Image 1 (cartoon, rainbow, N blue to C red):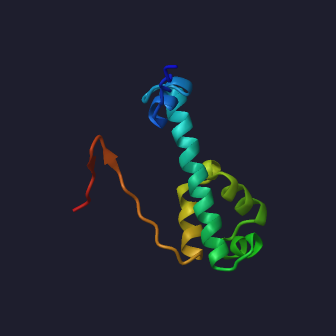
Image 2 (image 1 turned 90 degrees about the horizontal axis):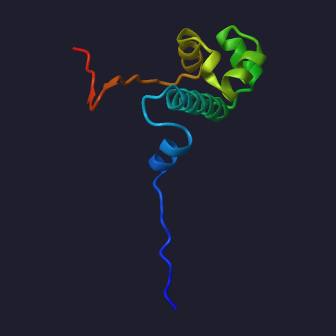
Amino acid sequence: MATKEIKTYSLAEMKDKYIGKVGTKERDDYEYELRMDVLGKMIKTARQERNLTQEELGRLVGVQKAQISKLESSANSATIDTIIKVFKALKAEINFNVKLENNFVKLT
């Protein structure tokens, strides 16, 4: 009895097939939402490591607890200014990288 080989797919192939190819609006929207979700999780993790409640962090930043909660669940509604204030209140260093094609943009 011959064994049948199972076809495997990479994550990139699955994204291309089910979400859309790189450069399409659907794929861009997906990648954006994913980044915002990761950013929210980073904020939550940093807050918890500082042993702060959402309310305490909100007071440090000057926003309501509800805004911190919303930010942690998905950062897509926050301004860059708010995100920077949150990380500053958490005494956390953040870095920004800009990559054009395969090269990182460096400021001189």
